[in-house]
Image 1 (cartoon, one colour):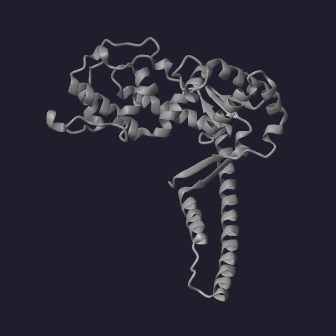
Image 2 (tube, rainbow, N blue to C red):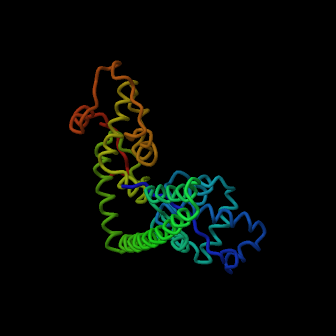
Image 3 (cartoon, rainbow, N blue to C red):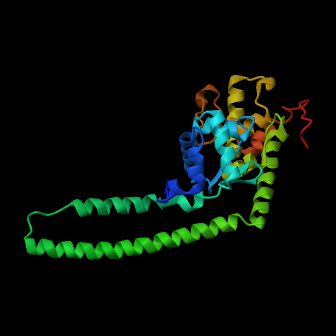
Length: 294
């Protein structure tokens, strides 16, 4: 999939909109407005949503951590946005910024390279040609750029329509129900792989959906990488992360793209397959129970 860049497009009347004018008139309103803009910047890459991952005790505390803003200021901003309909709670631990969709701009890395190339080409001028030829070349270049800009605009509009259709499809009740079903099924599978089954009820549906986005194979490998470290270090089972700790955030360092393995010369062992891992860790969690586990 091609890399995509996003940016925030503020309408020219953004600061004249009544909710924004009202927000700025509150004591400390300019700070709250900046927080709102930072929330929009986070949401543009997440389908115009903000997520509560359970890292902190509540959504506002976690958002303040993410934005590097004062907690009280974040609470005032969130309360105002909810009261004005600029933010709504969409699902469990998901918040939709209702105006964000109108302010999202995006393009692929390829489109950016083409635009940069055209800008460089436009700046280049061959001073050795005669004025007549140069004028002719300029006219041809202008004509070419007009056609290309028209084509790019049509392609951009087509991409935007497709993105809207995809987003609308994702928001249908049927899609949400299927996504929830898939997330729960994958989590059950991963939970059965992990040896220390404690805190299952502390893994939210939102977090399960994040694991679904990461995918089955990377998460399997993350578990194997963590167990590899445990074996290398001879870690006692009581010091192994609870399942809730691992699946909420502890897995990140052990994903294939992040994990740094110990030299295999220390053990002479290779990575295990899932079947080998399940056989090797059989019985490790005997006697460890979780009242939340089902």
